[in-house]
Length: 130
Image (cartoon, rainbow, N blue to C red; front, side):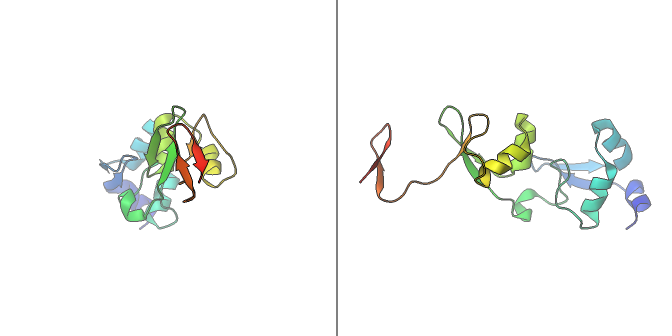
């Protein structure tokens, strides 16, 4: 499939929330959103899995990693697609990837949830060594 073929045919994408989107004119659609058409072309020829949070197959089929974060209020937040979640919440994805890789301890008050050791117990306010 060449670039000209892609421009002339409707394409089906999945948005960051995994909802299907049919795009009739990819060039116009990208221009309206400030996206690069070449990044989407790369998806269709197999040179990438995601462009701007959009995929050509649902994210669950891509085996996106999921993470459990702890928000600034102490609530656990389940995140399946970190790139889409960062975009949706207005965060810089590179700093959150540093968080999940262990290169940062917190980002914007969020931390990575980790299960406590089996020899720890929670007394209602803190973890205590058993």
